[in-house]
Length: 360
Image (cartoon, rainbow, N blue to C red; front, side, top):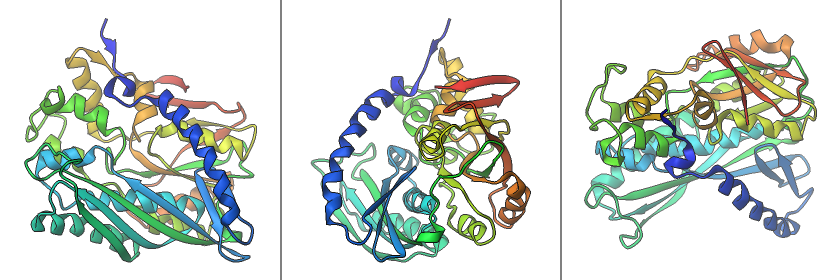
């Protein structure tokens, strides 16, 4: 029987990450330095007050090993979109509007044409977010950064700060059974689960394909499909918030659909059931290719690792569900009601391909 291939097998140990994150509680000792009402804890991060009515949301994010796929493709002008997306999509979870972006690139060598390509993507992402890039740094650290392509190794991190008024904060509170979960379409893998995807798809890391192969499941080179930039959801969400009460906003990234369980801390007694998925072909290709390599990537593992076609989720009252879909349809996010809140308490249920799963 084929061996199950998990994210841990790929090199990302979920249990260890959970244990490591416990160290973050030590940061609370610094909260005494904030003014006004201090730090507000939210389901997906913290915000801090700068006045009686205004809060800032500061996020710093990277793109992980997707930089290796950019190197494999020798295409560097879109990875900056991913970096911006990972930061601003996190900022808007609190209801904040991104105000500024700063980048930090650690490079094996800051070769001018590479720097220009990296910045092209960052600029494109910033323009899509309607957010200025007000600072950044590119450092040459060849002793630390070693790429898979000669002199082209790099890592990219983007920080973004946003502002939200107290009455507009998305708190994750008052969610109740029957509330609607709306999915906003992803563009593919985005920037999570890449370590697993690389090791299944590409010969470079023990997988099946050369970078420029075009599998029968795809209509272009597999490396370009994997490199497709992360969608940016700033405009759709902020527009929706003007007309509909958004109870929760979830960027479906690390841990994928397990992330929704965070909301149960803020609205006790709730759980989540998902029953509508429209995954792009690359997700099926991952499972099929793993099988051809002698492994099994279970459906459960897919929903704990990948976005499976929905890159962002919002929760609204059931009566607002169709209105939310209609409003979001003005943007390129193919919105759909993908599930509902239930009362089973901290359970994530998934119905997919006539199969019922409980993620744990």
